[in-house]
Figure 1: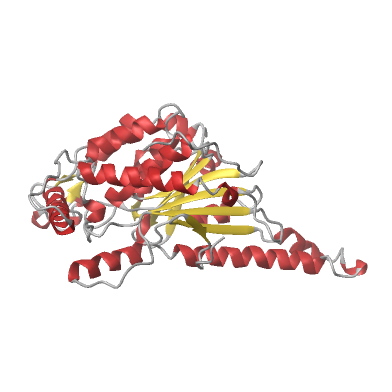
Figure 2: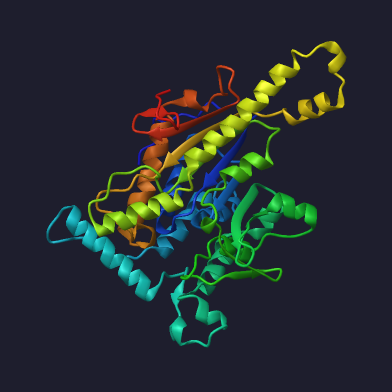
Length: 391
């Protein structure tokens, strides 16, 4: 993808640059391509937050220096993608769908190099209660991959903020492992925290951390946007959120399309609803500040007024939302089709979508018109608000 005509973006002077990465298995190479294009456009994140495959991409980004991040992402995605090439006798969407389904079936049978391998004997043949009886695959290869591609000392030295989400198996609560918070607690981020964020059952086993079992954070919420907005309310934020499932889509016309649509809705995590909720919170704080300014002088020092004054302080937030748009030939298996051709297509799509969004650098400016939070969906050639209004 040619980015020669892309120029560094104009960003709010003091805004903290944040990259938010959703879960989505094999679709994660879209995020890697988007990151490559963002770097070429002058957007180097200071904080990266991820769930599931987004956590793996986030760890590779945070655990390497600026000069090697893209190379390490390429190394990971080249390693985990199947070298099988596509050359159907009959061209078209149906032939490509058949190839995708075949590729996904091979992955389900033989696993992914450097990522996961099928259990032998299979899980149902192991005694109940044993670790091997609770998942179809062994993720030990992923631990070795993370140890090779990620410098965890760099992560724990706080060169970049890293936050990854997982859900407690017994509590059902979403928990974030954050290197800034861990430093205060005297703890360190390790491969197990990244693996916990991507331990999607029943394919992958739970990961034990400090005596607790954790599964993929996408079970509870597939995007860490809420965590970022709750954690940082002082500094201005410029957030690029890269999602792999779209909440909006066409009415399905077959069983495969119905299964794909259900998965898209389930894992899109209602991003627009979350964004709208946070915009309402920001606008409510602005209204409280406006009201406090109209109070008579004798109430300005009232303890309740002082409490509200502190509670209503806020930052300005701009969310640029990139969403992978599936192809007509992709089906319910798209998130575990690790074929090389699919990986390249997703990577290139990420590059293209970021390159296209950077044509509208005005969306990267501070919120205007009295608003403290602004969100854009980068769709087509025109940036839109989540409600669909062209900006």
